[in-house]
Length: 134
Image (cartoon, rainbow, N blue to C red; front, side):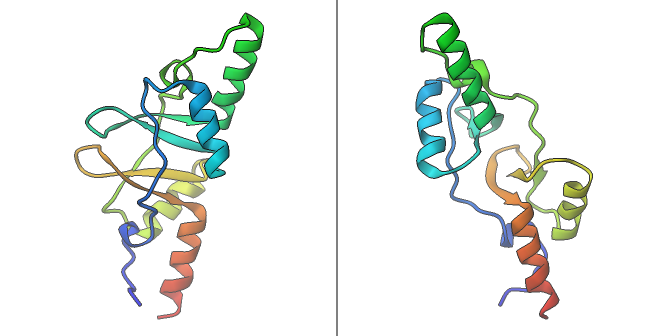
């Protein structure tokens, strides 16, 4: 059992991601299909440029019903203020960040800003449990 406290050992690396050009309705369908509350939006270089969430999806539905059209893109509705953490942080450093924000998960990026994974509060709790057994 690996007892390292680096977040790389506990983060999820297989993520649903969106592109800015993706149709917002298709993104909503993916949120529902994969039972997730949001997903990172990546540019062509793999850098995270936003988050598309359930709330953004609701804005899509309300806006399209008001204007009687469906055609918004993910880039039109995504949140562009994204709080990320670096892959070299420890579990305790990320735990501190969770305690000082309302976020339930953070996208994890490498030194070049490319998305490499995601760490959640639950992942941190599992890591602490694992580390305490040693």
